Image (spheres, helix red, strand yellow):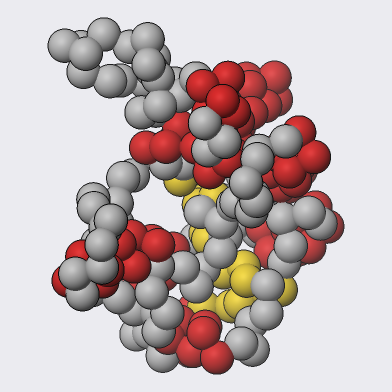
Length: 216
């Protein structure tokens, strides 16, 4: 009997990650999902997905702890790096950004050590669009990056974190010969599997409620 292929999804309880878990289960994969607390009620939706009982295993893992990530990634041929620490605060100082870089390095280091075949890094359009020097009539592509100094100037820590995180992932992949692809989603709307609103859905909810200043 051939063993089922295993895939790890970090931050499994989030909006995008939950749909990835659901899709992988529907295709017959065994899924290793990481979460800070597998017993938390906000992860209940994962446990009731079709085929979850037999094919989903949730691991307690922290992006700042490489060993916990290795435990979750062991035996997996692929990893979806969806979870990512987002700095909180008015200014994106080096002290705030460092955990983002460390988290990315830990995930990729674990993937290297566990001989993962491919890593999918779910970045963000935030790593692309804050570039004041990009020609306005030219479509943004993989050569366009948000300008880090521009992000710092306007104290946009989220955009800076995503830019730094993705660029670090690509640098690491090149030095370690790790097969990585990145995707940069924008606003993520649609049916929710999780019980709590994700950031994009919060924007939509505010617009529907007519809260002043809300826009997409």
